[in-house]
Length: 276
Ligand code: NDP
Image (cartoon, rainbow, N blue to C red; front, side, top):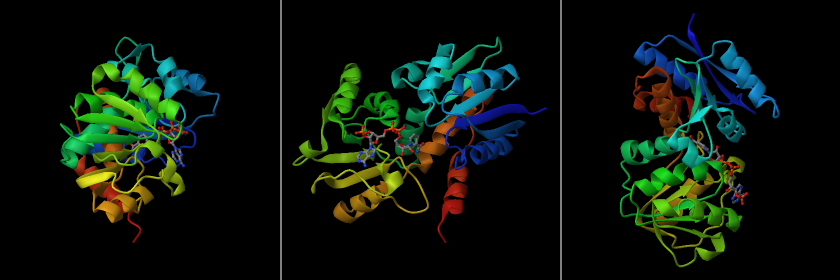
């Protein structure tokens, strides 16, 4: 029987993870089965317990269960502790379920590897202070930016995030209305506004010459934020598909001990998302 994996979420039907892991498995000749599982909002612990009791080998966790997965894991990696959330659960040979978070490394590999966007010495602005923003704070600061500014609609959440990570590098927090007159080399949109086709209101002149703009949201077309960055400043833009595939590759590595190639998978999904 194939080793069994799944992604737990609610909603879950649009998750691309099964296709991504199937690609990885074929590429690396691993015998796995990977399915989507819709979990009721109050049913995470029960569903995860049942999955592992029945011999399941690993789970990916998506919205809204990353905090529950953090509580469920018997052991946590440093990345998971820093993120305060778990997106990958793996059972080890002695049956212990270990929680990790691969979102941060996924973003960093997409930015610096696939896109070749430098971070060192750059003025970086992170929009949003939710779970995704928290998960990327540590790796962004460890990449040595000139400074990392977090801006959020609810300013207090940005302040809490900056405070939590201040030991790792130069980090500050602002409201969107305080961004006027400031300039950044890289702006990362970690808000969920793009899912509804909108974006935070940002001032003119925010993007420096040669700036890059990254939206964690992805889809068939450029997001509102990507269009804004390209139109107002001619910025180089990217969506979060690369991050999705890179975080999946790190999960696959945790489970199977082999690192798959990501570029062919990103290319395949990009083509399948194409509106034409
Ligand atoms: P959360 O719900 O934890 O946080 C949402 C964030 O978006 C908050 O900062 C919230 O601000 C802000 N926000 C929501 N709507 C608006 C709006 N209209 N204007 C301004 N700010 C807004 O979500 P996550 O952090 O988990 O996820 C954020 C996004 O990142 C999602 O779209 C998700 O799909 C994407 N993502 C992509 C990944 C990938 O691999 N590509 C991985 C993980 C996430 P406030 O605090 O004020 O409410």
